[in-house]
Amino acid sequence: MDADERGEQLEQLFRRTYRRVMAYCLRRTGEAAAHDVVAEVYGVAWRRRRQLPSGDEEAVLWLLGIARRVLANQARSQRRWARLLLRVAERADPPHTGHLRHDGGDDLAAALAQASDADRELLRLAYWDDLSRQDIATVLGISIGAVDTRLHRARQRLRVRLGATSGHQDPTKEKDHAER
Image 1 (cartoon, rainbow, N blue to C red):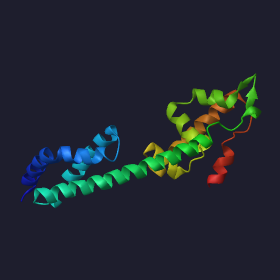
Image 2: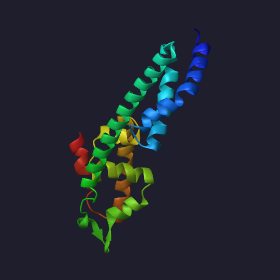
Image 3: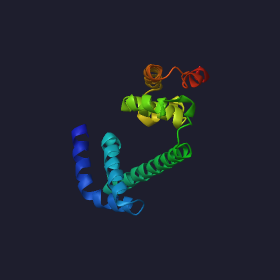
Image 4: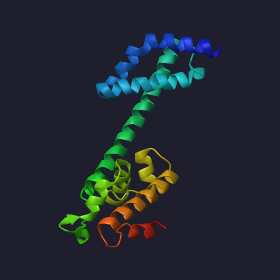
């Protein structure tokens, strides 16, 4: 059977099995999540269509097996997300920066306010949330090398802003040395 025939077979199988796969998912998760899971199930089935069993009942069981694994992956992802949220919640407040005060204002806060959204997010992940380079890469969906480059540039821009508003030592230098 060639790829076109398998694709057509999968399309027909989708029409015959969608309700059953959706019901399976709805019994195990909420409605919105079930729709995502079912979409992923048929996406996986499409990518693995060469492995599609020939009989209808075997194909349904194959799809339910895929659904079970997608649901397990979703649950693991939700647990990781919950752990990350707990870590962030534990460090919700930025470190005290009172020693950077100048003319009644907070120099670091002013410098961060002038930074781009991307720089602020990166610096917060690194210093306020105290995430590792790997964790930052995961959160932002970029490589560790990109994190290193972007973080280096964001710190440089922050140093320039801090230098313009204050003559004080840069608070990020301490962490720079610790990372090396």
